[in-house]
Image (cartoon, rainbow, N blue to C red; front, side, top):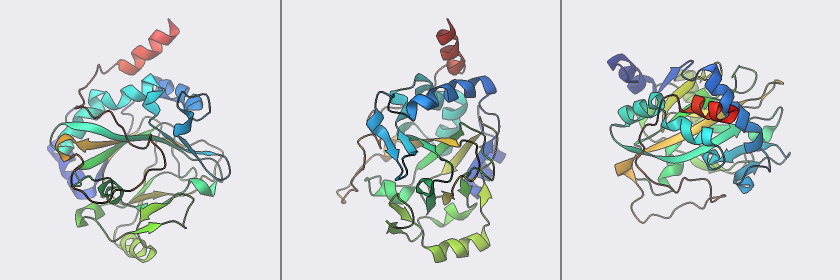
Length: 271
């Protein structure tokens, strides 16, 4: 899969691209089949799960450690090749997490933020990073889709503060007055769609998500990529991590796998 000049221009303008149906229903079913285990104490690395104060699962870090399917999907050519094209070179997986959205659990909300400020505090020098967001469940306006501000990424890193009060999750967040001003200029867009939709977005694109007010589950898989020549450098003080699984420690140049890899896993299970 190679992006067209028009798609590249749209990404540069908006900071994101949306591809409905990039994964088909059968492939989505393979991923969904592993979700209950990943979001429970049954996964091999149960301490990689972050819980809300209410006891719901907020995030499952590094799910590929315990799921062949989640370890395969980001290597599919239709995901990896656009990432390499957008970042302009070889990449490695910087971080991966399956974010859940339990019903009516305020502890699972995410304040408005850009991703790169946090990764800068990991020692990453430049914003040559992006995320491939995989909708593992259908996302509607009611079950708290990711909200994105188009075109704002072009302004670079905005002023931010370390927010320890807005939600249960401390995060480098945008001040409320900044969010209000930007929302008037660039009204947020909901990343709704059927499971299997993939959203590619820039590390400086502001985004957030609210509370799930529906009875439907909402699971989003975030694969964060860094250009291979943009690895940790410098001696700045680096942020502590709440989990040893927050970052991927297997730093290798990614190469595509067979495009039918997810279906092959399903066939092997059936056999």
